[in-house]
Image 1: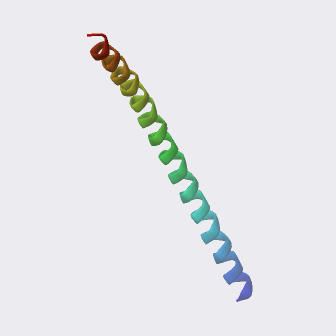
Image 2: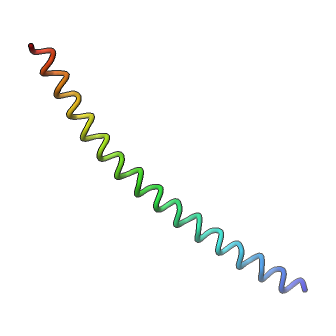
Length: 55
């Protein structure tokens, strides 16, 4: 009985860690993609700001 409970807990723990690792990976991928887009738009906004100041 104790052995089965320990085995079930170990399997549950492995599944939990696998799911959280996959979720963390996809979350980091999505954040890095958004970061590149935000950085590009930020540079564009700064350039537009300089143009407005010149005129």
